[in-house]
Length: 98
View 1 (cartoon, rainbow, N blue to C red):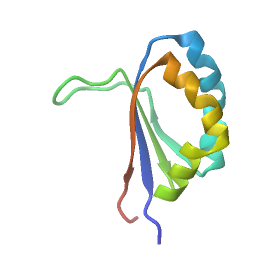
View 2: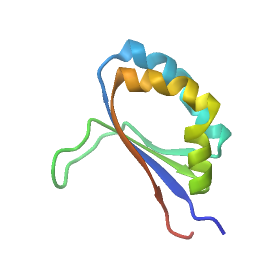
View 3: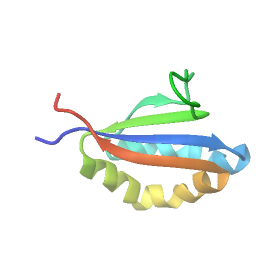
View 4: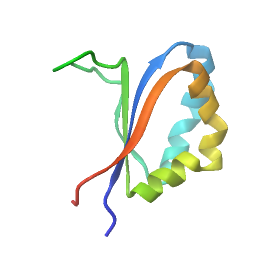
């Protein structure tokens, strides 16, 4: 049985115009690889430290699915838009068994 995996990104937008092509296409790439958005830029409250400006959490069925999405040609085509539009720190973490 595969464990779920969570793609977590902290993002600070610097250029909304440069980000637009990414925003228009990213959801379709996530869905194609079984991903489901759990959080996307909602309110963030700091409990300790400084909160990031924007947090995205996407659940994938497995670490392999998350990597297939991130390394896919569809996502590779739009990733540079996000990278040019702001600063990102992102990672994938393996979840617990359901």
